[in-house]
Image 1 (cartoon, helix red, strand yellow):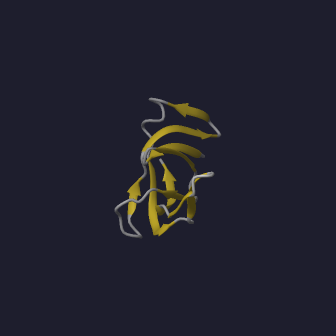
Image 2: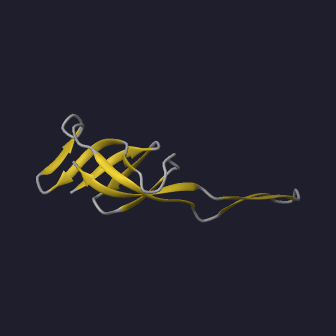
Length: 101
């Protein structure tokens, strides 16, 4: 069974036992919480969307907080002696999906 949820303005396909990296959530590691709005449910019985999927809830446990890999933002204009380098690391919260009920 799997579900498509909307959390932090993004959509994620999750299934029980899976680790998902969401944008930072203000919760301590070990806290159980409900993950976003359920948009779709899929499994052996078929696919449910809209009002049929609205009754489902996806719960998970916060495992850790961290920062992603560093990306380099490089701006350059040729022949103008213009170069700017900036780095960025996105914060995340890792959540283990417990159940889809």
